[in-house]
Length: 124
Image (cartoon, rainbow, N blue to C red; front, side, top):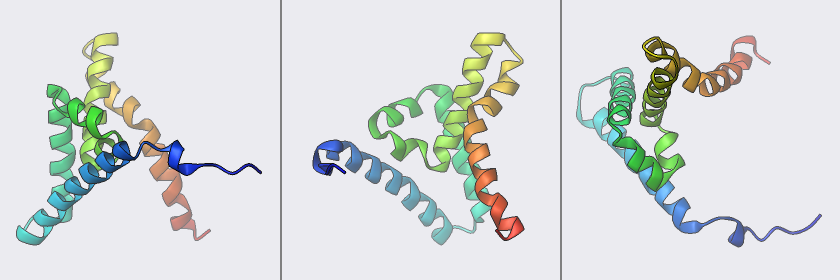
């Protein structure tokens, strides 16, 4: 096997931006848990809704361009992905795309979650 020089594989400034952005989103969530009476479920809904609103307005795309996975992996990224899918489908097939686009855009993430949780229910 050949040795891989990992220092040349990654662009470290991109990894740092990704880590800091994702970390800041998580810090905001932790502050909301610690300092408010909001339940984690409500904070989840706030993050997904905020991501969808910012994605629909085109604002979240700037954060995705800057931080990559640091912006798309947290819950706000899920909301952004739903809004982006709905907007693309409306452009392609019309009004009904507002209802089907989010499902299509999130299908990969949903399948991943279902298949990862499946062994938990059947004690594999």
